[in-house]
Amino acid sequence: MLLSIDGTFLVQILNFILFWVLLNYLFIAPTRRAIEERQAFVKRLYHEGDEMAAKASSLQSQADAILADARRRTDEAMRVAAGQASDEAHRIERKASEEAAATVQLAHATVATERTQALEKQQGFVKELAEAMVSRATGFEQVA
Image (cartoon, rainbow, N blue to C red; front, side, top):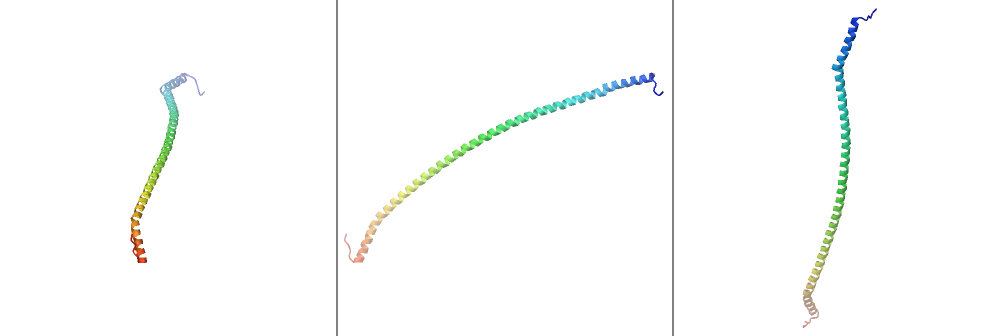
């Protein structure tokens, strides 16, 4: 027979069991613990990553809200400023128009005064010229 159970076989089985226990104690158990710790560490990192992603999403939402509010306030300020600028431009235009009208009115008055003065100065000259023309045409000198 090929296999006989004797003392050597029992020693080999005992040797194998001892080897298995030592291998488990010295290599397999520490390796399993290291793998489990690593898996727990990776799981914790994934969990922290998910929390960070959620927090980042929340912060992004807050930033978007702040940005939207800032844009709204900026648009409102720009509309108000544009309205004020338009009002100021109309006021300046109205003032310039009034000043131009006053200047034109003053110019008309000045021209009228100067025309009246020129006509008054010319009256004597026109009278003399008329008398000279009459006297030449008639040959008589008019006595005033």
